[in-house]
Length: 223
Image (cartoon, rainbow, N blue to C red; front, top):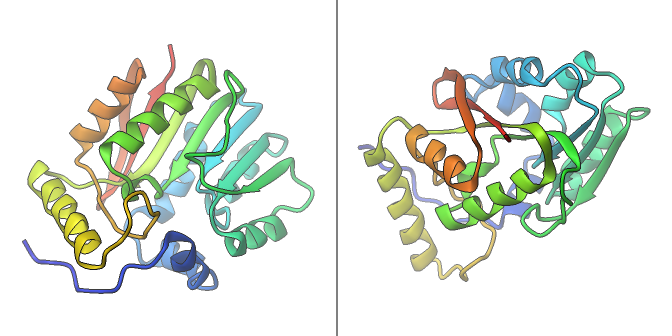
């Protein structure tokens, strides 16, 4: 397997702050499948959704399609990067949008607060244990029958998954990154691993509805 180019790992906030101006064009034009996936995610949100939580909302690319479909939906967006949130706020003035600058692992979601939770290309930076705890938190935040939509970078095989995991461990070790520090390192999982984690968290019905390149959408329903 071809190794990724060596680079200095940046803190997550700094990585996105440095790229805020070109972020939208990069996602739409250079990440295979994303342009179509933004539309697909919006299409999958139930028409009766009233409250939606967007994890890692960034500049709000996914919200452009969502607000077209559901112009009155109430959205809470969480992101680490204030520069990203400033762009998001400017895009959607007049919409029912509340933005929180913070780490969604730490920000309280409440219980049974949302009809739908979404995340778009943000979960592939975190290891198993952290993601499992987050998925359990998402499940608690959803109302009965609620939907969590995850669009993310997922690899095809367990061999590829192991490669990225080992590479991430090496980078953290060699660059002496403290345990728990949020850094921009890709550790994508295989679809089967991702599905198993969501089941372990308590989601009852999981369906893969889109895949182009490595961009994959999973629909995860709360019983």
